[in-house]
Image 1 (spheres, one colour):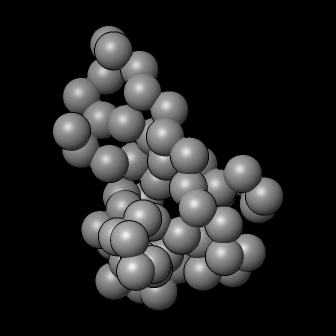
Image 2: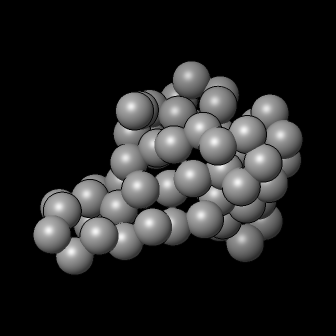
Image 3: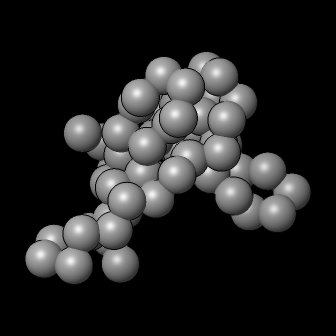
Length: 56
């Protein structure tokens, strides 16, 4: 699982005009899954199921 920052650098993700993270492959806004026991949140593309972690 890559981090969101690495996904942005590699071109797997991009930000739209409202600074939301989007998947470059399917152009869908990533959904956030927040587990209170973890230090990071998981961002998931609803279409292709790609996952990225994001530090809180």
